[in-house]
Length: 169
Image 1 (spheres, rainbow, N blue to C red):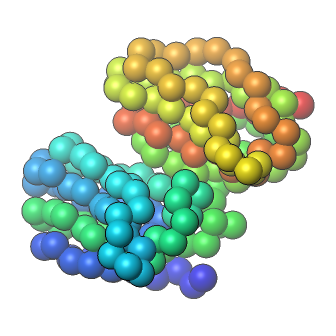
Image 2: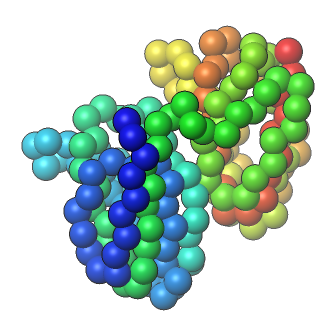
């Protein structure tokens, strides 16, 4: 898949995405996924504050071929191949803020996770097996360790504030 960009200032239907930002108008900003039959596959973004983040496509659902953007004000969506996700090498600390997708480099057994200063939902998912594994789902500030399932290839972070993840063997 080649990288593409699309932008606008009103509702529009576009094809596929990975990163998005918008909602400077502080209205509702939503990005819905649809399949070829017009059936909803997933709500990728739903924000009332300005939003900037990276969301995976095709990891939680099958068949998303189109996106419906609902916005009042400017927005930008970029499509990128999953292999261009930031790398999270085992033994290093990866820091970020907001939603993100990380490509695990190496075999991780444990994740040391900190974050959620925004005190909103903070979740980390592991992908690589048959089903996604929820490693963390907190509403309060979090600092701790959790097991990483064997074969994990990607971590998907859902957060509003800053976070840090360190993977260990």
